[in-house]
Length: 430
Image 1 (spheres, one colour):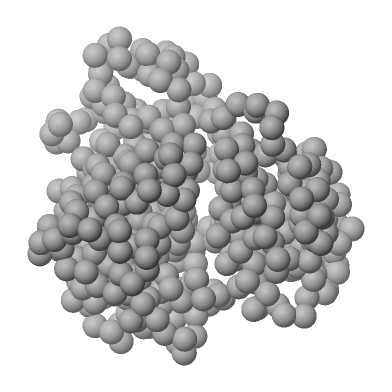
Image 2 (cartoon, rainbow, N blue to C red):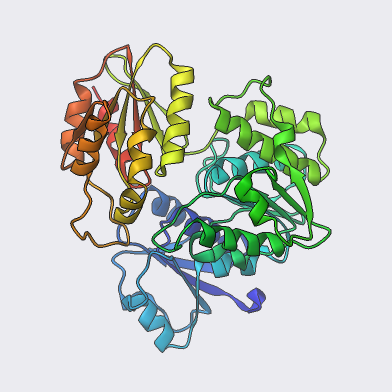
């Protein structure tokens, strides 16, 4: 589709972090943008202030017959009444990733993929390109601490984008530089197993042209399989791991993300000293070990998006590195029944650097509870492994419990891909 013909566009699920970024892009291009979501949020409030027409609830009447395109989030059911209305009116209807590809592929694309670390690496690259006066356009799956935004409007040839592997959606992108941070068994509600995940990354890597770059850790046994039949130049980011440059975020995983960003930026011709300076000043992103404040009696509060066992483990290792003598309590919101069940054994070992785990009910998202897994089952397994764990049926109970742990010797981390971060406001109140 020729996007120059799009004058009016509607987003179903516009409150999502990626959807809102893409909506901002079209606003910047002078397109009339509307969108709907289940309820208003800080994101939708900001979009309204920027000129977006927002609808809630999500009903068929939101779909105007003069729309040129409707973009929907992957979380939306295909029989949702707005989507049915759009199709019945003959309006071009695409998912978020198809629309992102239509936008980005006209540029020189720097795509960041991987099971973990892609949001932070993407945000690092945006800072690096920005500081080098390369003026990139960019979409990232969080809010940059530097700007509070998930979208950057640039005027150069560069488009930096976070590329998600779910349902092979990243295949809609045509990268010139592809960063692969790592590859693990993830999104197992869609992929059959690790081999299936590898096949998707391999197809993506093979799409990079011969004059392009694939930035990765090529000595890794899984990545070796991803690189089969790749024609682009392979760049080993592990050669750029820097343990000396001071960074604002703790942990080896942050150093690895910085190394991947460094290798990609060098491939684009950016000077090493400029890259190092940008990384030293990098302030992180929303919900990536984000400092929230100090509770009334002195406990330090952080929030993190980690929802896969690897992400949980590296975040807690970084927290332990930063606070070796403090008690660390994690309030964890498991995400998806399938992920909790399939990675159960990994989860019960992921919290080893925490002194206590407080569990919320599993966030169902797009799934139905079949009764075979719960946060109570996870609690008992953690205790059986010698850990300390509690489970509660709601956020209010968790909030009240955590308030009893408030003292100067404690660090509390709310964690998960759901909405447990919402309790942070109450925890910080007197």
